[in-house]
Amino acid sequence: MDQSYKKKKIEIRNLTKKFNEKIILKNINFDLYEGESLAIIGASGSGKSVLLKNIIGLLKPEAGSIKINNVETVNLSRSKRENLLLELGITFQHGALFDSLTIWENVIFKIQRINKLSKIDGQKLALDIIKNLGLGSDILNLYPSEISGGMQKRIAIARAISSDPSILLFDEPTSGLDPVTGSVIDELIVKSVKRLCASAITITHDMASVSRIADKVILIDDQTISWTGKPNEMLKSNNAKIQQFIKALNPKLFK
Amino acid sequence: MKKRILNILESIGYTCIRFLSQIGNFFIFCISSIFWAIRPPWYFKQIHSQIIDIGYFSLPVVGLTTFFSGMVLALQTSIGFSEFNSESTVARVVLTSITKELGPVLTGLMVAGRVGAKMAAEIATMKVTEQIDALGTLGTRPMQYLIAPKLIASLICVPFLVLIGNTIGILGGYVIAIYKLDFNPDLYLYATIEHLYWIDVVQGLVKASIFGFLISMLSCYFGYNASRGAEGVGYATTSAVVTSSVMILTSTYIITALFFG
Image (cartoon, rainbow over all chains, first blue to last red; front, side, top):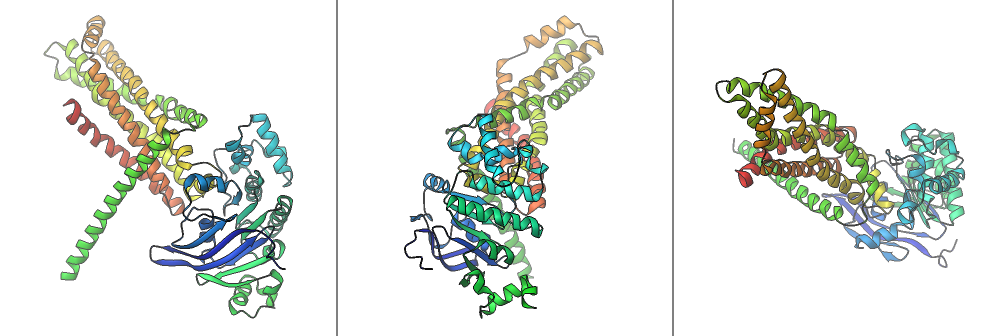
């Protein structure tokens, strides 16, 4: 589909990231358009999470440019970056829910930073958000350690979407989950992205997830992007690396 | 042989550079913590919860330690000074030792063991489970939300704990002096009040503030720079307690020698 009329939400050009002298990412280029859902796949240690951390400013690239909503972020001041981050909803690989806060406090954490809410209003708002994700009021006053891994992932998504961001970033949202719970999480991601009319980047190893949530796929291999295409093009692709990757992750597809 | 010597020199040089870099990083961390502690917004809920944790929940362990230290001090001093004017001397030694040295140092060590370990483990766990990264992406500065409340609460609570510890320690000495050594209560009390100098109390409080600063900063620093999962959390906790304890014992001498010697 022609994307030229769509607004670029994220634009990455020639991004290079090193740790000491070791090159992790080299000359990464891609765009994320308005309303688009992009999946980034790659082997463990290929630099997918590093790429995500560069986008949100937790790491600084050695070279290249990262634009979010057309704003160059690489050398952005702290306060401007903080304002920009408010437009992003992010979930981390292990959920990263705050252990010392209850579920409802976790869900509305970002909103509380912007508008102070009373306990009753906060709980009500948190309940509205988690209801959309298929959770009930019974977990509102529990702590993250008291709920299952699948629920923690859902709460992490709830926290990410709580402020209605226009860009969503998911770092391995289905890792460590059984296939059924994984597919529920995928559905929630698709539903949330649609409801917010947001653009999304999802890092995943799960090919089933890719087919469910992504409009476009990027394979990171050997420090760089080695394949870009649509999910249904992956199986037909002659690219050796993409075939090797799919084979390793999902051998059944090739039987 | 020459290669071996070079290797040894290289490892010594590497250790020295690493040590100096750690000191530099710690210094920057301290400056940054102070900067964020004095800058609004202040997270009063976090400060309040830290004050309760450091100030209130440390009271039993501090009270118990200083009480028995006061008791043993009175007992040992009475043996040494039995031939002199014991009431006055024992009271004076207990008072001076507790207010100037034992009170702050014992309180500092107890807080380092109890609170320092907790702070380091909490922050290290948050670090390795990406909670600190998550904070940064949710419109909250980790230094301001996590570290500054701990610094502020430590600076308030450790001097307060030392004041209470001093009182309990002196009371411990009084209990032994009166009930075991059969001293005259009035004379002992009079000698205690007579030798109570504000400069000694101030000296103890100055030390307490510095210990509070060191404990919170070292614990947060090791926690904040933790890596490598559960092992990293353990390493950060141990490093925080050991370094805080060593720094308390080292700095108490330096403070006394520089300002009160």
